[in-house]
Amino acid sequence: MKPFLVRDALNACGGQFFGGEAALDREVTTVTSDSRTIAPGALFVAFRGARVDGHDFIRRCLEGGAAGCISEREPIDDAETPCIVVDSSLRAIGALAAWHRSRFDIPVIGITGSVGKTTTKEMIAAVLARRFNTHKTEKNFNNELGVPSTLLRLEDAHQVSVVEMGISDFGEMRRLTHIVRPNIAVFTMIGDAHLEFLGDHAGVLRAKSEIFESMDERGLAVLNGDDELLANCHPGTRRVTYGLKPENDVWADEIQVKSLGRIALTAHHARGTFAAEIFGYGTHLVYAALAATAVGLELGMTPEEIAAGIADYRTVGNRARIIEAGEITVVSDCYNANPNSMRAAIDSLAGTAGRCVCILGDKLELGDGTERYHSEVGAYAAAHGVDLVIGCGALARHIAEGAERAGGRAIYFEDKARLAEALPEILRPGDVVLVKASHSMAFEQIVDALVQR
Image (cartoon, rainbow, N blue to C red; front, top):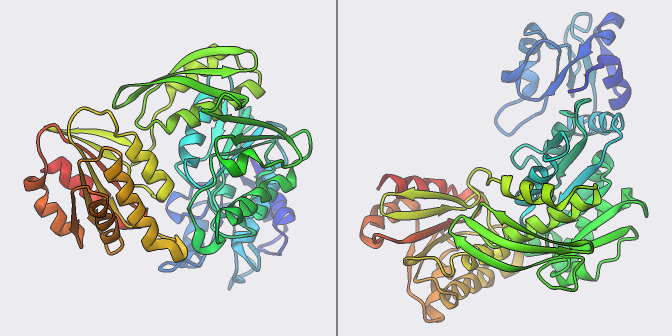
């Protein structure tokens, strides 16, 4: 992190300072809300959590060398505790990150959409890293705590920043955008995520379009032109569309699945074409590669650099991770799920050698259409080459029922333990097994059972 003084943090956050004038000139070299990572020069931000209250660790952090802290409580001994007391630690870290962002005159790319944000962020970062010292969001830290924490890692050496921005309700993107102030806004697609709060697809677009409020006509919107709502979105900035349709500004054809983890494509843009290969599972990765192409071209990169960056992409965590587990192949895609991402994952099984098996679990925050969305995914799997659909979880019953009504073969289990016990009898050598559900379902436990069987 580019260092600053406790005094700068106070000016950025507001609030009341305790601890004496001299403490204001202490240098801050990192900002953290995790007391376990405290090192000399850290600024500790105390949050009240559901199980742990960070305020209980302030004294320990200061004894460990912290330069000071941001707190919602006044210190008991104000003479010795360098502390910025604020009404909200969350708003304070956001204000501090917004100030820190203002210290950098570099391109900042904000990534949003209903699905594929982390994949697209990683693909764009992989491409940009071929030319630039690239800063990016770690993992999927994309909310009102993760985004400020990301920006507070910016250093002088960074030449570009790629920031994932996730929301679930109206107003959140506005707050994130005030912090990030992106020069380029990338939209993956408008889908069925967070409908419980946003209502419908138009509501999703309206909420995510708050990102444009900080951009002027010099900014760039990079939009998935195959998404009807985004194709018709005119945000008041320059815009570039990408997708598989030739009418997009950046588009792809000659897409070939060379193997379960290798995809070839030809990308087209205004100045020519180039061939590229993606090393990962899922044809939806082509969209991420095209978004990265659009951003790379905007920042002056050559087709050769972009193609090399696309080839550098690697999956993150349990997102479409391919695991060879003895005589079967497991596709661990259990970080998160919504109807759009499940259909995309199912599509990517088509044409693979071996029997296709999908172990699918509950999808959350879908609102009034929850049962219908689950049933439709089951039917979709049955109609798109999946040989066996296994539903697991309370809502996943509707997935299994939907598959059976569509003429497919399906099995249902109420819980993961019973499913794990039955797996040896269900699976066959040569099976390709997709495992996917919302993160809270902890389907990585099923992946473990498959690997250890």
